Image 1 (cartoon, helix red, strand yellow):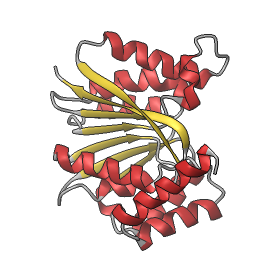
Image 2: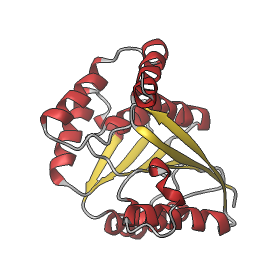
Image 3: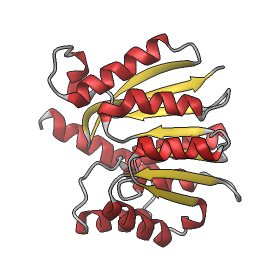
Length: 223
């Protein structure tokens, strides 16, 4: 058995025992495939990890940068209490339509607002609208803009806000300072900013599994 196969099987083992079968989540993944969305969704055990983070933190307001088909959105929205709100940003109108259908099927659409368009433009509009700070912010969109997304995340934070950034190891390519991949360079700049930003304390965890070798950043806004 090669290493990648073992990673995949361990993910399946974890999900089989700790992530109960869920028709709405399964349907979301199926709908995403049928709509030919890229398979960038978090794994089921990673989705539950996000769900638990939101519950532990007591999140009432969540911002998600990067909706895709709404799989992670469902996990996060289910952690919200009555009256909670999740704002999620998606560039592609087709992805947003698929996500809206998935959210309705999962019966969380009343807690979620999908904003369609360039994320940086949507974030500027949110600021202009004077939105309240968010309790948890999940960054999972185009990696070249990760540094800009982090700056916006801090602008929408309060002391105690949790910020999560996905796909920050990229099969180890984050080590390659000379990479020509703008996604790798975006992640490296993301780390550089985290290293010097006094308002947040953060760490990163490497992950292996059905999504390959990657990792995530977990940060806590302290001021």
